[in-house]
Length: 411
Image: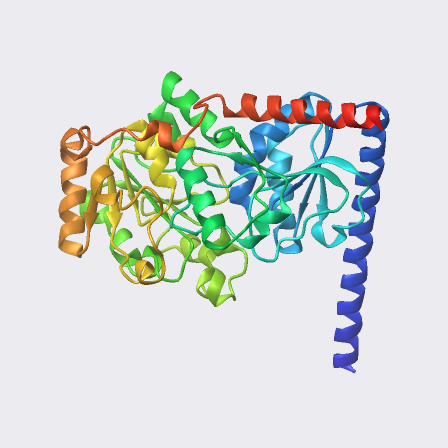
């Protein structure tokens, strides 16, 4: 009897979820049709991790401000977290949020925006332009953020020359003949970083607001998403930093690690949110930067510690010291991207705990000596339109929509 009731309960939950999803789908369809009748832009943006949200946020905000109808689609595991992010980012005029299971049930829209090129990507048929908006500045490795799904896109908004070179290399190596149209846009997410760099922040107030000690130096640790990276090999040493060096520690692991705590591939089978909420960690001058964007945290930090996370690029542009943790097993399966091994050039590459502790001590006591001031500039290789990428992306979208309108007039 209990088993029967349990099955019935699960069926009712699934039915309720489906009905709620259908309601939001119907609402989004109405909003799209209404926007088209009024002559406004229509956009479907697919987001699969909270990290991607921050790469698209500023552009979506500008489009909504211009009257566009924006529908965000995502999978059920991210729905709740993304709803919170959208609610905190928009007080009014917020985008619709629809479960991606209803992917093929939308009317024609001007744009489909996608921030990841996973192998299982589905692209809506009823979108005039299908645009890949990278959720990174560069590929961490030679092929890291690319897949054959690239030939399903009509356009790519390139972040910089390095990304462009790596993408074209992937296409050549994998014999992808249908290459999307390329646009030199930059990375909208980084606009806020350059803005904060120019106007500054109240560091003491920010650090104090995190519950940390503003009189102490702050170390920022970021790990990339892979079973052979530092979160599984260096984390114990990382968590020693507050006591060993009398410092604050901000931790930001990849948001993909939080999606499914039971997945060995995704999270290593660890519930990371509970792990960092544990009383043995929380309150010991350690702050878990969960589902937040990074610029203010980076502005408030004195030193970066990472493995191969592209967080290093944000520290690079602020010319702050960086320590790279050696992850040899990772590079047994992955080749370097077109930048080569940038780690010992733009920071300190450490291979042992002894080297790690020495690098932290040096970086926190004499940070000027720890910064690679004489390293060659790669600003232009990394980003187009630095600080102006949001404006460039929005202008390009309006230009492309004008082409849609002219095409319709001719037909």
